[in-house]
Image 1 (cartoon, rainbow, N blue to C red):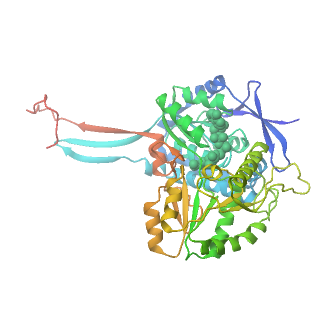
Image 2 (image 1 turned 90 degrees about the horizontal axis):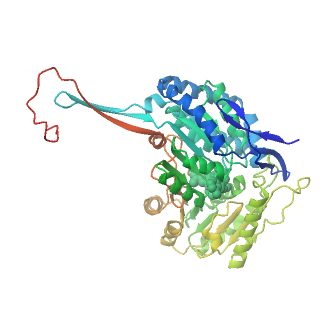
Image 3 (image 1 turned 30 degrees about the horizontal axis):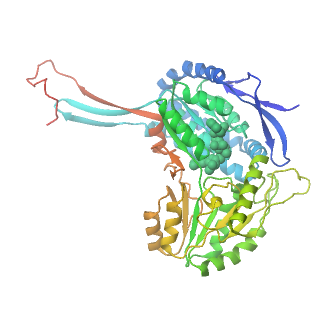
Length: 499
Ligand code: NAD
């Protein structure tokens, strides 16, 4: 009998409707649970719970709201093993990586514990005669987040921790491929003292997403996922008058300058290209050595490092990475490998046909490495999102700046060098949102912010930190005067100035 994964609405599990989706165990290649695929009517149930709860939550003082976040942080920490195990069993990433996924989300929860400080507005006394001006930030009301499969703990926490601490009620539509951890997080928020109806989890596919985009009372939508869907969410959400931020796919480049420490680069690249089976929006699936001498030396060191990677089940503590999320995604990655061969890429290490004893049906792909990939290849222009590293040889520093700058995606990029001037030039000129200097996965810390450019990000406001607070609130500007009773002789028909 398969486990059912229900919605979480008004502080309780909620089930309705017949439509369900399969949730796989990627290690075995079998179905382990069924998730509800909800409808507009299910969303309306969640909206009723949110409408009933949000005004009182917004009126709760920010210190009390912060206390819930403190308690939630402690609960997530004490449930770390349980959450990581569930996460790995549905996603396929190794347990240590699942803990990292949870931890990076918790860092935004930590930021939200300081919400009383962050929400303080600005004040000018005596901006004019007897006049003060101040500003404050107010919650939007009911808001929503739609999240991808690859970080089922981190990305929901990035969104709901800040939104809820700001005084909003939140509707979370997690990925239908690994939906259990988001529900567990909502249960822990309840245990931490969050009033029912402030965090609701609704499951589903396009039908539920469209219901969210068309729901008038949802004032803002944050989306993370692939670019075509991100663009669709942005267009439909903004056409309906919502505030929308929609983060999309990526194809991040790692530039290797001739003076780089190649042993360090190989170590960093192996983790950044193949960790989590390459299913990270901040992975480094493209390496760009500058000059053939650098390329040849790097290739020589990379091959044994790649061949010695251990692919295993997600509970194997020695595995570097586990299976990909499902059979369709495995098939898609293998199609891209074939495409790169057909386009003329040199297949140096072939990960296809990988089989793990006792887990022959699991969704595993061995590490794959191509050299001599050209910028016009479709397999280079598209995101593969698997354990595939493509080497594109650049002949100069200018080439190395141009390649990521001209790529359709602009999420992250890294440069490996010992030359401060080159690094500084690169960071200033490259047309990409997040830059690492000798840092392979430059995800900024929680109290900065996160967001890519070009087809990696639609909208104007980034993901968390102070930008997140801006996204989940609206600013009110108040100009006040408390007259003492004497009528001034000002000309009331002229636009007032403070002069
Ligand atoms: P996805 O686009 O398939 O799904 C994301 C969400 O959109 C899910 O909740 C899904 O249910 C929903 N969805 C899917 N198809 C839809 C449709 N036709 N209409 C409306 N909603 C739909 O993405 P995924 O495969 O779950 O995640 C991987 C992608 O996310 C990769 O492209 C990766 O680069 C990207 N990603 C980006 C970032 C970032 O910050 N830029 C972070 C993580 C992942």
